[in-house]
Image (cartoon, rainbow, N blue to C red; front, side, top):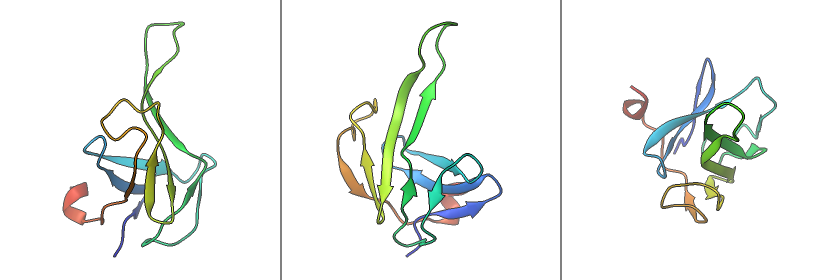
Length: 96
């Protein structure tokens, strides 16, 4: 069962923590093990929101995907912070 999808920007997957689609860019140093059913991405993926000029951005989702599991880091700001869950199956309907 496919858990990630390749698009022109990189690899996309559904994030249950954010209830959104996230993109892991394929042109910024991330590696992918090539397994769409049990994906692993290195290094971690950290998404943040900008703040006022000169302030540090706020992390809202930070995770590591290993062997088809998404491990949310403690600095994520959603309810799955600190938890590890199976990456949900990819459906084209989720993207469109």
